[in-house]
Image (cartoon, rainbow over all chains, first blue to last red; front, side, top):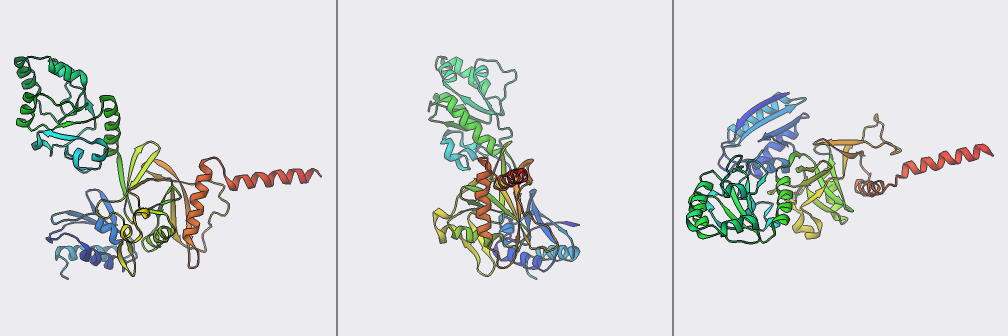
Length: 87
Length: 314
């Protein structure tokens, strides 16, 4: 299991398009992956789940993956969020 | 857990039931409600402040207001300044009794919200405890879809991509009602009651691969949705695994644990050509039968056993 924290800095938070970018990448990996905000877990492979977290600018997130490809996926997602989805 | 403020009473989920009217102390609406408990401030008003639970919700009934009424101006001045020297959370007056001007002035100055309720005290407290219990109930967010099928709250779970949303869509199409898709907030209202609802922002939206996000309420109309539903059974959808044994009899009751409550649970294997919505409808109806004491599998088993015995005696 790999777990990492990240702070969302993009001004608009994670709205539909960024959420899609996360989900699209997550779907490429067989591992289970969760986004966790304020103890609420969301499946990073589900658009509705990610949107449901209501992630705004400044939100602290934990990304937790478990299974095949966990390290690369968490790396990728952290990078994506840190670069404000301009990858 | 999220922070709950006094504002919640007039703007949150509880507002419809509570019907409170704010008349003073608006500045204190952001105060955090730490305990879901109430206090009748009669003793404090009479000057006894030991064990005064000032950080709870103060409820003024007819007794308290009658007592306040008979005080002289000087007595009021003394009582109120002692009373408001505590960091009070908020005050609620039942029977729509409007407290005197001096009380309101104190409340305004100390930023203590004062609410009025039309209801009588006992009735109000019963309702209030109910609402508060629900707000403070233990909760968990599940990656699942909740649908009301023939009045049975069915929680569909399974890995992403197994077809929870598509199944929900077809159930809606068949006249059933969607509560929440992909993210269900489950609250343990009571030791035997789990209530499921969607998140406020996602409400009644569903994501269908190939179409994207659609608003179920707008497309299928108001009858296709509901806001909350008691969770009565869990159905796990999983890819058909030919190596796995699926339940062929339904004699054993399996349970799924959510917040330490056991919910009836079945696994439905998914494969192309299987009509999952019909299976779910049947499972929901079967669950209703079981609830009123009719277990089809067990009854057939009994019948066969009896037949074997009578045949054997011939």
